[in-house]
Amino acid sequence: EGRVCDGAPPFPTAPRPSTFRHTLPSGGQHAGEMAYGPLCQCAFMSYGPRIQQKAPPLDIVKVIWEKRAKFEPPMGVEAPPPGQFMLLAFDLHEAKADASTATRSMPLDDRCVIFGSSQFHDGQVHDGHKSVQEQHTALFFMKGKWHLKGINGNTYMESMTAHPWLRDAEGAVPKRYTSSNARKTEAIAPMDPKKRLSREMCVFRLGDSDRRFWIAGPLPLKEGEMEEAGADAGRSAAVGGAAGVAGADRRDRGGERDRGDRKERGRKDRKEARSRTRSRSRSRGERRRK
Image (tube, rainbow, N blue to C red; front, side, top):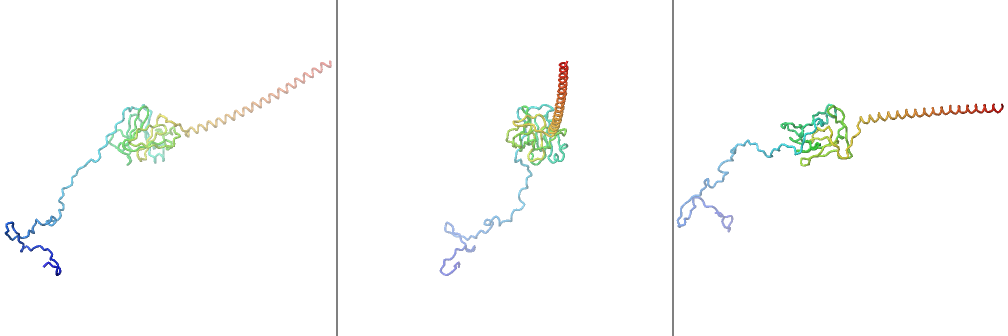
C-alpha cells in the first residue's frame, strides 16, 4: 500500500482515525481520534461573506482648505479728493455695438474699493465671471495716486489706446494718452507689489473676464506719456489750417492790389513830372526869344 512501482519506497500517508494511537510519556497508549472539528477549519469555511455589515456612512462636512481672510487695506491709504475721479465699467460686446450706452459709472469717493465675484461682502464691485475670485483685486488711493493690488487672482492693466470705444459718464470721447512703450498690457499676480495707474494705463480687467474697468480723472503722467491728438483736435486743426490758407490768400491779393496801386501812382507822378518839365522848357524858350 502506498507504492507507485516495485522497488520504490512507499509515500507517507496519514493514519486512519480508527488505527491512530498516541503514546504517552509513561509508555502507556490510549486511542484518540483526529479532531476534524471547527478548530481546523478556515474562517471562510465557517460562514459566507459578510454583506451589509459595515457601519452606516457619516454625514460630516470637513473643511480641507481654510477660508481666506478678508482683505484689509494697507497702511497709509487715504480718501481721494471728492468729485475728481470716476470709475466706469463696460462689456466689450456691448461697447462694440453701442459705446455711448454701454458704460456704467460710479464716483470714487472711498479710499479702497474691492473687486470680486462675492455678493456677500458689502461695498464690493461685482464681476461674476468664473475666473474671478470672491475677493480678486483691490483699488486704493495712496499719496495722491491710485494703485492696483491683486488679492486672490491675476489682474491685467491695459492701455487706453487698445480701447477706441471708451466713453465718459456723459457719453463723450475722453482725452486719449499714449506713449512710446510697446508693452500695452501688464499682468499683476497676488504676490506682486502694487501697481500705479496713469493717464495711459488706466484700464484693467479681472482674470479672463470680458468686462473692463477704467478710471476717469486727473491721473498722473508716467515717463514718456503724452496726449494723443483725437478727432476733435484734428477737425479744429483742419479748420484752423483752412482759415490760415484763406487769410494768406487774402493777404496775397491785398499785396498784389497794393503793388498795382503803387505802380499806378508812380506812372501818374512820372507824367506830371514830364508835363512840368515841358512847361518850364517852353517858358524858357519864350524868354530867350524876347
